[in-house]
Image 1 (tube, helix red, strand yellow):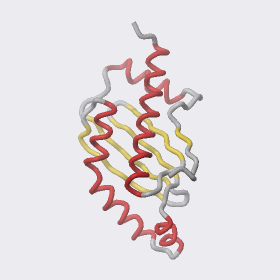
Image 2 (cartoon, helix red, strand yellow):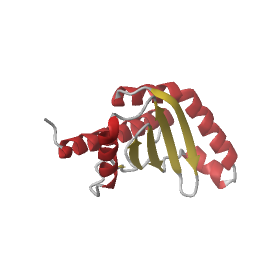
Image 3 (cartoon, rainbow, N blue to C red):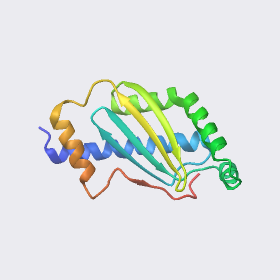
Image 4 (spheres, rainbow, N blue to C red):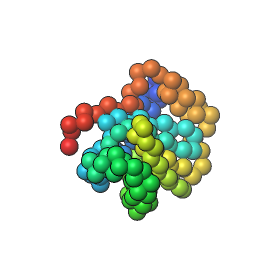
Amino acid sequence: MATGTDSIERGHQLLAQLSSAIVQAQKEYWGKGPTRAKSYLLDDFLLVVLRDGLTKAEETMLEVGEVDRVRDFRQTFQNRAAAMYISLIEELTGRKVVTYQSQILFKPTILLEIFFFEGSAAGEGAAIATAVAQLDVRAADAIMLDDSQP
């Protein structure tokens, strides 16, 4: 029989896997990935917060005031890549994603990947374990990346 500690540890491992998978997808499709990532799994949604990771071309466009063009291109690309992101998350969580949204914020650069699942997590115990894991200061689900990584 699994203990509460085992459940929390499995939760941390899943959150770290989710963060890593999204970072790797960003690197593969954008040529550069974020420098930090953290996932939050709460009941029927997953929020993956990614920091930094703009391409040099995007940084240049922002320097000349083309915020809307960078945002529009990012949103268009993410919309086209939605099926890949959804499939990845469904595979890792074993849950069906019913909708997905991506958003980018600037100054500082923060990317938000938001997935909503069909139904809710398995009962109150899962919600409590999720909340406890989110408060755990070890932050095993936070992925810190060296910007020099490919």
